Image (cartoon, rainbow, N blue to C red):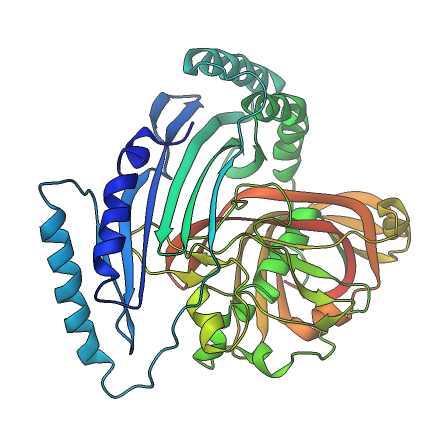
Length: 467
């Protein structure tokens, strides 16, 4: 259901836009409210609280024929209307001084649109008590699997997003929900402690709970096997990446590096490679809030731009980047609907949404059979990229050894992929039909500006340095 609070502010927000438009050639206001619950059941505790996504506030953006300035506020009503209006005027005058020596920004040119968007949560909405009872049963099953399992954490995060965007030409509102299921298992054998986790993301509480239950035994088994894992011998290997690792590569290799605000700052090497081969011809890569259904899917971004599906790499050729409204405008390009804020009190940046490689024609089983000696890389841990120099480092929680086209039974953990982005992507020789999107992560811009993202894709066969 769309936020009753935001709906109650619609008229006064339109009034503020009208009044500010008498002084400024462009005015827009974004309002956003996110609420929901976070449930955790572990071996030692049960906790219910607010979702980590919780937020509520507004931000106004104005253009004074030279530059843009923004002013955020937590509430607006008849009593503080004049105060907010005057604060926006004052803030604009202060920011103007910062731009006196810079080139004038271009005026945003919008098309007229008035539309409401809505996506409901699918399936039965279970109560918190029902979810906790289910988690307690699964917790008991996990501990019954092995006495080496010393802790299990089961979690469910569900939240509802409402936002409103108003300018002289636009009046947009959207409402949608999302659910994240989480399981984390810790096993111990004497002083040896290992950890395995998995996340599930759906537009349904029921589907998340079913995934948790269906895969719990396999995760318990993996947790115990990890107790016998060893470190990998560093070297260059043939690899197959599970969809979670494929998504990590997509996110780190051509994620931040194609955010167009990085082009404006000359911080991305990709700027000089448009329309050139940067990957195997088997590779096509997408990003966009409408590219698939996941937690980074929305109907319009925080700049009021309708969501899109952007093809970043097409059959190995880098085609374009992703952008917020202002960055695209300054580069003379159409915005891609990737303007995102951590919350209304943070700046809008070019940010990834759903980032993934397209499925291919190969079978996963045939790809494994083709490996003489290598590894299937599993479970994303973390990653880093260097958009300026195109180096990449991705950490996988574990990998399964492949010898003569079969799994040897040996597991190595953890495993770090490293090297040059172009070398890795051009080494890809097979892309599977099997395809998955993992929509449960968050991404920062540098060390901050966290927003929900998803990534994924097929299994990839490539060659890479592991350590």
